[in-house]
Amino acid sequence: MSKVLFFNLPALGHTNPTLPLVAELVRRGEQVIYYSSPAFQQAIEQTGATFRDSVTPFLNDETQFDVPLPMGRMRAGVYWFSRPKH
Image 1 (cartoon, helix red, strand yellow):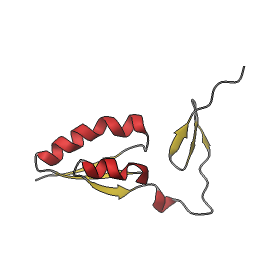
Image 2: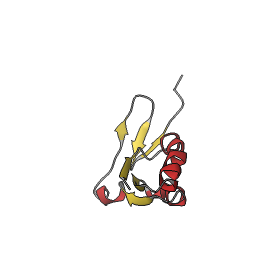
Image 3: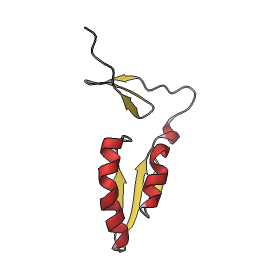
């Protein structure tokens, strides 16, 4: 049995496509540990993988993520997009 680590962006478009692969690896007897946001914990654990929180340990009351991105903004590991201003 091998150990497989997934470390992914906590966003639906990044996480959801990996879940069938994770489920298949678990079905084949591999040990899968998936690092992501608690928002995805239930979906990850339903595949049989072990969930590990990769977001919360880095956040506290003094930590504020508000990083400008080319297409949107990120706060606490979650992307949101706004319409362009005309």
